[in-house]
Length: 345
Ligand SMILES: Cc1cc2nc3c(=O)[nH]c(=O)nc-3n(C[C@H](O)[C@H](O)[C@H](O)COP(=O)(O)OP(=O)(O)OC[C@H]3O[C@@H](n4cnc5c(N)ncnc54)[C@H](O)[C@@H]3O)c2cc1C
Image (cartoon, rainbow, N blue to C red):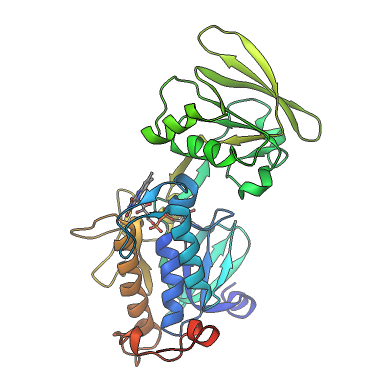
């Protein structure tokens, strides 16, 4: 099997597991150090917690931005990363990490096998799995009118959308869709929303139909979703509404899942690293929310800093003659962005 993997899989210098902010910045920084990179993300979209959990929220503690919407920060990270055209694989879960020999790792995924000389795990709080809608018919309509991740808003233009949930994601989804959808209905099984106060005020000031103490009882349709039965859990009254799309805002559960079997030193739900962000397996690094070391602080900016530490050490791991210290980016004259814009100053 080892030989097949050596010859059959496309090899990169670095494989980055996870496409949250840490993974995006690590992939960008691989380009800065002249390392080829493949980034593998289990969700169909990049951005990790920022796009899955709070795309519309403002972040106030990213260096250089007084405030920036989470979704916008991810767009900027993607643009910065894509200067170096890393190989991005979405909807692909890394199931197993195998050391083939002293200088090569194999990543077994839901789609196949990738090989890399070094691995940077940026798995955050783990692989996200959407919490399923409670209605019995939900499984039958998945991908046919039931969305567990919000698509780009245009996909909902002129549609009747039912959003389910009472947290930030559900409220944000409803508010984002109100201007484009034909009609937005939001149901929540309690009467208190677990969302930002300001967003809840906007919700009640909007044209969104808000039903509290209300649950999704049944889903109707033929090829696609056409309607839903809503149950008021106080009065036990039911009502049917016509809908084109049911968007779940019930959130995600996250789990390290398969990573626990990779031979890594794990404490709680975190991978122990040293000051080089290296795990107990030489050549395997961990960055961002998923790692732990004395004094660890889980923030987006610490993930960015750790990504540069990991990539610079991965560089010398891969090529022991290379310097770990990258020098100053401001001295460079070969940045792709300079080649396509006005040139360096
Ligand atoms: C509501 C909320 C508000 C927040 N506000 C702030 C804030 O204001 N400032 C701040 O600094 N931080 C904030 N945070 C925390 C911040 O979002 C995290 O620190 C940050 O997302 C960590 O980034 P990451 O890239 O390490 O991990 P994540 O964002 O969790 O991304 C990890 C990615 O790895 C993928 N993955 C995991 N396992 C696998 C696998 N086996 N195969 C393939 N892919 C895999 C996951 O699907 C996920 O997309 C907030 C968090 C929440 C929930």
